[in-house]
Length: 448
Image (tube, rainbow, N blue to C red; front, side):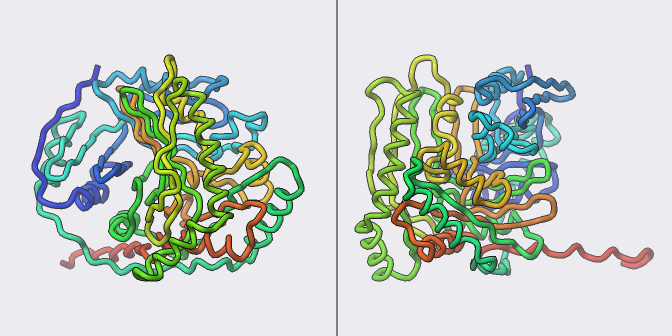
């Protein structure tokens, strides 16, 4: 059983900036930063990992590797493999793709061939509080190096962001919306579907600087920065997919219904009032909350599911949403992985009912979504789990960077308004993308 070496240290600056310092320190070949309600965690390196693709589940701990085929409940298998982790007080961090949802349908082939989930048990972990941090590491040398980095004063670094144009140059999106509206009105059973579009980022991205700069201009429910196995994401999540505490309290927070904000008091208030009076937005939200209640009831104790803060307005960066919180108590015999199975993917990023929404998304969108509209996860060995919905993010994979946003389509949707909604959401990230600095030229031999 591995026991982390640990130490407490006082912080000379903001946890956000210190977590960013660790991310760009070069000490770790991969990392995850996860923020929950102002509390940051940094996870660096990987002692072990669990990876799922359509063909099976792979587990690694140090040099030992195992592989198994997927059974009928892949997420429960993930939980079982993590529970085997021979480390005291372990936590795991990582992501799951939107297409993981296809593993629970009769079309698992739609999941594609790429990885669908990647969780790591870190070599080194820092749990930040406002003025101090707990540092845990598998070896003393790394522990000392992290403590040294955390002990130095830190101030914000000036950045020069390059805003991204959020228009739809392909012109495809209005046609996608029109096709979805026609399908919904035709009586196929589909009531709502979230259709998304991508916007390319035409330059290499400094993900750490983008995360810090974007976080200072956003008000997310969760934020995250990750670099795992060649995938990089910086995001400012407006809502959680699932929150499960160690003592069995369960929450999901669907947000649906959107208007822009950031214009000033009077205009923001006018748009807020418009949002609260819009039948289409209210209908979209209520449908989402109803499904979230039904999904929670399947894994919570009888009579424990309730809705709080119904139709409250939540400010999230450049937009404001209608929000609600659905609460419950975990049923006897159920785990956090059963909760995630019940509510993933988020109704606010897929549709109602989910199966016909998957079909519509597969037909109308180009390619797989990947991490977009999936989740970034923080999992603890005591049974707690926190899953942030991956929206309002910048992505990079295989040398390509992009933004992505969607809108909820109902029978009463209009293509122009839904296109504008995607632009409003993209503006939570697009102004804050920081280009990577070019590598300095090599110094000629023999010269200073």
